Length: 558
Image 1 (spheres, helix red, strand yellow):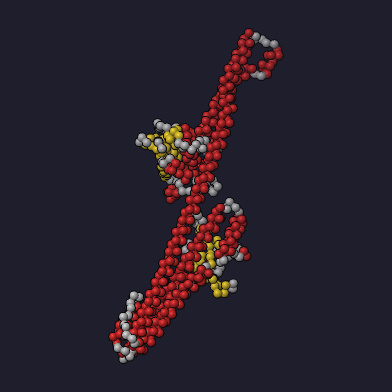
Image 2 (tube, rainbow, N blue to C red; image 1 turned 60 degrees about the horizontal axis):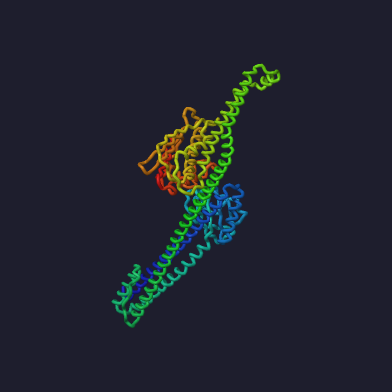
């Protein structure tokens, strides 16, 4: 084979390799653009699903029709803003909300490969193309799972991203056209150069051929150092320009990809920060509401206790005088009976009518009972006033046992025996503690939350098992830890807490109680009061079927 034929054949091979490199680069650009469009659409669909679910959660107390109507309006608004189709379906692919109201309550069946059903089953986002009489050219759709705040998949969010896809492909198309033109130009130059150089000396050809092979191996920094004034020199100059253009195109492509990835990373970070800010806002809002409720309750209890205290003190203070005056009257009647045992008939009849002997014997007993009753009311009022320290905003040195006893007295109606459950026995093992610097009202709130949870657990356990031979008990122990800390342990012998959820006891909005009975904020607020307000520790220890114990440790001096 002649050298000219070899050169032509070599440059023909170079042209093919250049076209192949261009085709690979064009295909890679197309795939990257498609992937980025799908990722952006998926993130947008997840955000729309999150805010749609957030709207539903805020209206979970409404009826289903009201919730679906609100969800439909929400989708209509998003459709008008985004100018693209948005569909929300349930687990059976029945449309709950659509930009076209006529489609609601019909089944979504445009996914020929059942991509929507698969996504609802395994929670993985999928894209597919919908072709229908309305969309003869087909539209790009992506489906992501529609989840609740607890992570349960309840359906899917289907979002059209055809504009985003077309825009990405249009951007990629420019690079693809440029690469194709450059590749084509390289092929033409290679063929022309092979024909011309076939009549020249072989050394420059081998040099140029080696440079082309290096370029084909993506060594884009390769340049040809041929300075002749003939066709070989011109070809070398063209080759160097081509290499510069390829290197420039590759640099631009790399920079574009890096910018896209940076934008994706920034968007992910912004979404994460937005989610965290939303969670913090919800937690803070709920805690403020709960704190305000407890403060109002404390003021109400304090006011009631004050109003009751005045008349009770008046009654209690005058009972002694009533007893004294009554006893004087009784003595006077007895003295009269002593010296006039035989009274006139009318007086004797009246004495028998009113059963004077029983009245004289029972009246002191009634007064004694009234004394005991007023004393009991005074104790209850004192406990209410002690518990209602909710609005005290400064540390105070208090007897922690008084707060526990006041809380128990307020909960006495739930501890005593009732037809539906037996008495809950409370055992107190108090240590010799000094006065504790704390927020008394907030600490009483912690005791109330823990004791109410223990009572609820014991009552629920009794309703489920009805074991009369198993006494319900709550044990309260206090002690010193060293010389600087106080320890309060409150334990019950109820059903305990399952091991798999023990780590979530102090999480906001988490509750094991039925819907409508627990807010999920009691233990979270208690944890905040102990750890943040008092710089202490609150821990939970539980063994299933044996009971639960909450241990509080607080420094004596803040």
